[in-house]
Length: 460
Image (cartoon, rainbow, N blue to C red; front, side):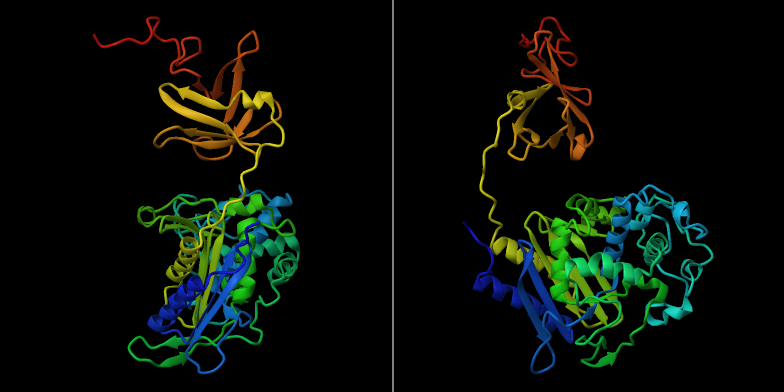
């Protein structure tokens, strides 16, 4: 049996070097990080400007907008319990906001058309008591853009989602969060208010190596958008949850839904390879698909980055208003581990049982002149893929009535139906009206086969 529990010394040194460069060049008073592999933390590191014992994985830092992912999980729980549908307009559950035509999904994906910030004064540097009501957060004209048409990051949007959680649960957001996420996942050092030991927040002068302490504000109504404090140890557990799910909190299928793009990308986002899911940022970097979230509040920066395919995640926290680019640091920590110690795949195992009807579908098929292969996998799915070059590919799950449903890509939700001749032999596959045959343009099959009675010919 192969184990990947401990990182190699060279990998650990490369990780330490990366955060050391980030702390020094970013001029952060302190920077802490963790790496998660195979569902558990395998490395913690810290760099600090203070002589002596540096911060460890139990020291709290403020995590800013990483809070939004926690709020999104609470909303997804409401959906899974049948208390709302993601397509429901906000007005159905929380009337009178002025943004009621936006759906729950649009709020989660920042496509509801809401403003990026609440009305002045700046909510991150002023007491939350200045905005006691949702109307104070949303302002007189909440909508800046047509609902659902563009991705426009909105802090008030997540305040609204927090209010929705409170309305449907009949309890404060913080209490619901503790009962439904923090306690089940064992995140005992994650809280709405700082708990010792915690880092102090600092501003670093842009032109001098001088510090200014940042005030700590209770965000009040804006808490669901950015209030939380946490540690690298707790966020490592949360990263493992975002990769695998946990039925005590949210199923793997629902977490996968959160990781799926849900927002129309701006042209600049397409160039950058970035988009947004349901409470999670999504980007392509170094050839990897990364999901997670960043966060910032005066005095603090935070980032959680996850590569599901590599089964590696990174958490990076710093106590400065600006400086190190933690998104780049997190992506580099993931890359270092994934490249130095590639994920060891599970052993190949054969099917437990061979169903002749399924085996009959396996092999080579043609859509017109395009060659495809169908493979029956040990996980019970059918996999369709082109035999050469690019093209549409998908996996299909069995429906129990002889048909199969596509799970991804162009064929997601489409029905694959094996069609038989009167004698019971397999004629072709009908995939959303596309006919796949054993021979290209099979003359015995429906369109596109049998179009020309003279069949194949030369050019002479």
